[in-house]
Structure formats: C-alpha cells, structure tokens
Image (cartoon, rainbow, N blue to C red):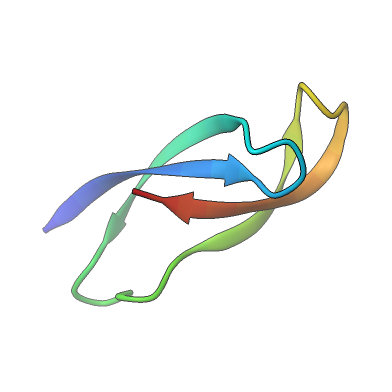
Length: 49
C-alpha cells in the first residue's frame, strides 16, 4: 500500500516536497538531497509525518 509522505528541509525546516512510498517494503524514514527554494541550494530533505 503506497502512502503520501512529505519531505522537510534539514536547514530551514520548510516542507517543500511530497512523494509516495510503500511503507511495507521501506519502513524507515526516507532522506534525499533536493533543491530548497527558501535556502536556494541543495540540502538534505527528511521524511516527516
């Protein structure tokens, strides 16, 4: 079952992106490097509830 998750910037704590993931196959929290428009640079984005 795929669920919608939100990604939050690690620097400014702004919630920039939404994506989908399968919680059965990936139970841990997702972390990727994405571009933050507020910071104007690539930062680590982590999954939040």
